[in-house]
Length: 447
Image 1 (tube, rainbow, N blue to C red):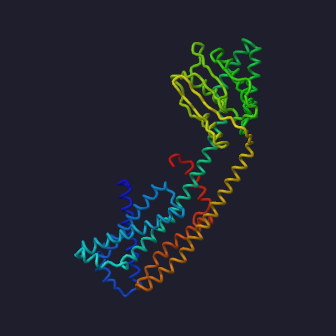
Image 2 (image 1 turned 90 degrees about the horizontal axis):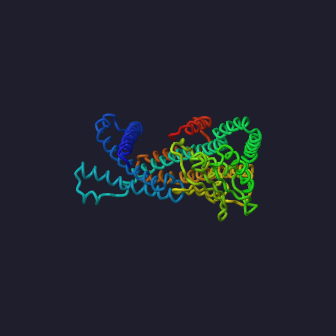
Image 3 (image 1 turned 135 degrees about the vertical axis):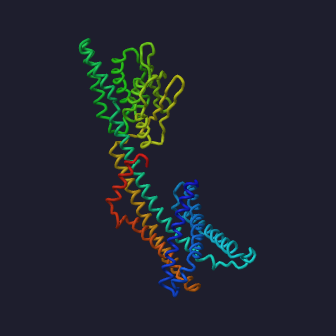
């Protein structure tokens, strides 16, 4: 825990202790025969003792909670981890109460250490420990609501970011600079060589037709992609002439092999974009099959000045492969070569099937989360209905002070909040508020 966090938690502990003390004063004033003069005469002593217990119990439980979050990476809400968490709260609360009583009785009331240890009984620990445990459970319930909300926001943001990245990738698969340069080449060819201009126009139309036909597919045959790559390179060679040397097989060794569409075009575009392409320094691009991988390699002669790469092309290819298979796209960069290994797949899946499967999986996950949340609420409610009566019975048999009200109220608010969250009901803000907050956080790049 950093010093900044430490002092922040210390301030919170001070505020919580003060609020609890005020609650005790009000309770005693209206439920007992204690006079106002007696309360005022003992105000500072009682306030100090209450504050001592509140601060120490709050801080030891806060340290324990922060340790749990770090150890379990912010996820502590399963049966085993919650058991560890609550057990730990009981242990640190006992230690905290012992420290408080030692400071008070030995440090301020001049008891000897042997006398202090001899006279200690579990009854002295029960009330503050149960109170601390009730506050801890309330805190767990509040944090659980916050944790679920943040996870929901992050999930929506990831989905939105992925969709946006894929959209931008598809939108930019044919770089506007390439189109602009191609039209310039076409303009010059019309005057110099009308026949070549006709061939150029035909190839350019085939490129865009292929993009429109294939961009909504998950997989296309390697043969289709190889033929498209040849068409695309013809355009490049009309622009760069002999500055590009392209080596590609006529057909795949496996006619059933599939890859993600437009992957070769993106890799060819990247190669031209990031490397020097001149007659003195020709760019060599080779496509070959190696062990069920389609390997695209080029000699590395990077431009000295080039606009910063966004990595959208390679990221797009990787994301689409991640959806379809466990096989990874590999990238190798050496001093002289840049190689990209594309896995060749055997199963063809349409985008519609993938989307339907994805939506069905998301519906199942959401339904399962809702069922788990409701089941967790019923478990929480059952525990509450069992534990609170037991505490009330212990309270009745040990003291006239109704301390069980505090854990009953604290835990009760937690159960109520858990139930509202489990059944998706927010009586204060409503669903529109939640959606507005989600949208706000999704648009916040610092979140």
